[in-house]
Image 1: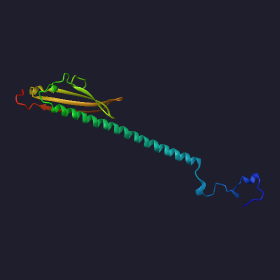
Image 2 (image 1 turned 180 degrees about the horizontal axis):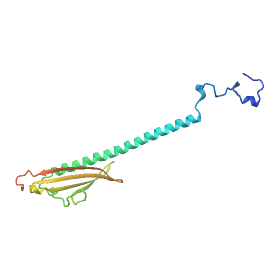
Image 3 (image 1 turned 90 degrees about the horizontal axis):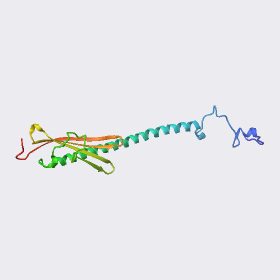
Image 4 (image 1 turned 180 degrees about the vertical axis):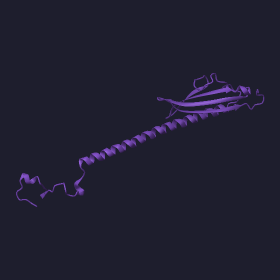
Amino acid sequence: MRLKNPTAATLAGLRNGRARTPLAGRPRRADDGFTLIEAVIATAILVFGLAAVSNLIFVAISSNTLANRMTTSSFLASQKMEQLRSIPFDNAALADSLANSLDVDQAAHNENIVVASVGTFHTRWNVRTVAAFGTSLKFVAVRTEFSGPLGRQSRAEFTTYRACTLTGCAP
C-alpha cells in the first residue's frame, strides 16, 4: 500500500513504503534477528560454560604438577637407595645414623637436590644396625620430599635391609 502524501502519523506505521503489521500475532520471520533478552541469556550460558571449562583446566594443571613432583620424589628416593645399596658394606658411608629418625637432618645423611622446572627436593636417609644379628645386618631407609609454600606436598620413602656377604662378618 503506497500513500501519495504521507504525514508523520502515517510514516510511523510504514516501513519502506509498506504498511507495518503489529508483531503480536504474526509469525516470526528468519530475518527478524535476536531480541536483547535472547542475547543476554545466550551470553550468560556461554559465561557459565567457560567458567566450568576454566575450572577443569585449573584442576588438570594442579594434578599434573602434583604428579610430576610425586614422580620426581620417587625417582630421587630410588636413586639414593640404589646408591646406598652399591656402597660396600664396611664403608664409612653406611655407618649408623645418629638419630633413629627420618624427620631430622643429620650430618652426612641428608641432601637437597634441585630439579629444573620442578623444584627443590630434600632427601634424608637413615642407617641402623639390627642388633639381633650382630653387625652383619643393616636397616636402610630413604625419604625424599618436596616442600612448597603449602608445606609437604609429595613424599616417597623406601626401606631395605643390607646383609654382609663378605667372609669374616661378625655374627
